[in-house]
Amino acid sequence: MADNYKVVISLYADVYKSIGTDGKPKGKNNTILMGSFVKILPEETNSWQKILAFGKESWIDKTCLGLSAALKCFYVDVGQGDGALLEVGNDENGLKIIIDGGPNDNLSHYLSKWQYKYYFDKNKKVHLDYIFISHFDKDHYQGLIDIINDSHYTIGTIYHNGIAKFNNKKINFPKTEYNTELGKKSKHNGENYLETSFNTLAEFNALQVKGGMLDLQEKFLNAVNTATSQGRLTNFERLDHNSTIPPKLINNKNFSIEILGPVTSKIDNKTVYKYFDDEAHTINGHSLVLKITYGNRSFLYGGDLNIPAEDHLLEHYNTANPFEVDVAKSCHHGASEFTTDFMAKVNPYATVISSGDNETYSHPRADAIGCAGKYTKSKRPLVFSTELARSTADGSTRIKYGMINMRCDGDNIIMAQMKEAVSSGSVWDLYEQSFFNI
Image 1 (cartoon, rainbow, N blue to C red):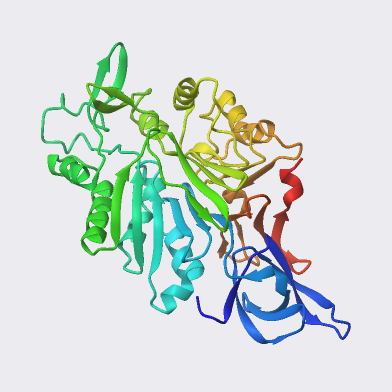
Image 2 (cartoon, rainbow, N blue to C red; image 1 turned 90 degrees about the vertical axis):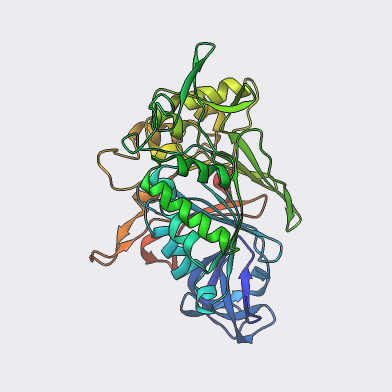
């Protein structure tokens, strides 16, 4: 970022229209969340700096400005799907992480037209350290194809759960080899397991050569191969509960990503997945389950976990509880496919539900919202919904998307969503630290 820009390093900062002759600010102009870049203007006092932010000239307390923010998470409104961007630290000693990409171009547009517009306008590369694909359902990865194909991005590693999807009508080899839409299911000691999986890009390509892969999955694979051949993508790897990602020290705080699922098994030295009720339950239930910790705070991203999957996870971890966090992304868009035992283990202060206007699903379901409020460590639990936060502007049909924002300095957390109409000099409906200490 250019020298005349700085970043807001406090969890949030109120900014003002002017500074009075008494040196005090006058007329609240807005509230700016941690991690926002602001342009430094020439005027300043001993305590206050004039800035340009979000199209407005304002005054900000100098102590709120610095060069490196802590952890930010943008739960992007991608409609009926999941898509989140995490940033921690600065460009030189930080990370940019995407967890799922939704079914459309909402995430891609948000990145190019807003979050990284400065980089795009200057034709600078944006480096994404990690892209996590919880599982290969359209509403979690289709929106990543445009991002992977975009030459503005370089990518460190794309992580996935290793389960591909096929169209049995296209398969040109015996159905006994691929007897489900996920590949081969077999029985061992009375339990059904999915055998077909891939670890590396070479193994993914080999599955495509065998035939029958879904058109969308082939389109994604072509994007990955192109980015790899162009030198923009370095690694493509499968994760399960045995995997590790090296932790980092960022802003003198420990940052780590634990892989809690999928929980796989070994049969004849081959990695297999427990087969749940059907293909949908199996691929959803073996979503990547990520626990992210920054300093003393933690966050859970669980893809589309369902009832048999949660039972499977609870059985594996037994009396241990690695699932408890401060903020959880609700599994499966607020569906009824959850267990109260698992929700009680997660026990967050706040839950974020990502869903769309699709009445065949009716997400978020009333019981999911209710239980998100019940199974919590807070007396005043927070339940956010991208769908419920969505609105239209000024009576028009222009959509104001319902992104949910989270900021954390390693000890304190704030969460915010944009108001439908601006009042009191701030666009944010903001929930401060007191909600995370009750």
